[in-house]
Length: 84
Image (cartoon, rainbow, N blue to C red; front, side, top):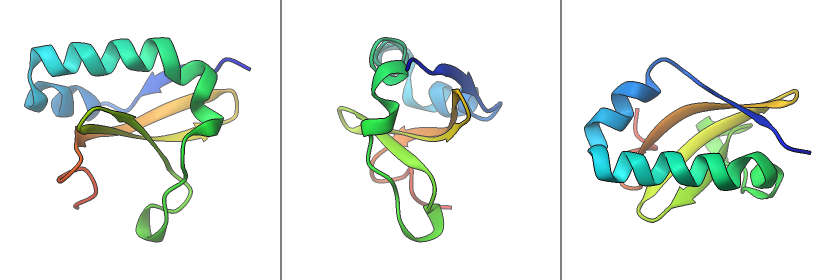
């Protein structure tokens, strides 16, 4: 079942932080792979329980599956994305 992708408002700030080239790469991977493979992505534990992660190189996309849509919550480098 293909999911519809939605973004939290703060994701645009996250994408500006990582730069245009990497942001384009992350967005194209999201558009091409995530709608079909969202269920296969690993679930997170601890304070991020209930959320899932999608890996694009050294960057991680944190998202939640809500009904028939995927809500992207955060995008960032793997060393920083789980902080805060």
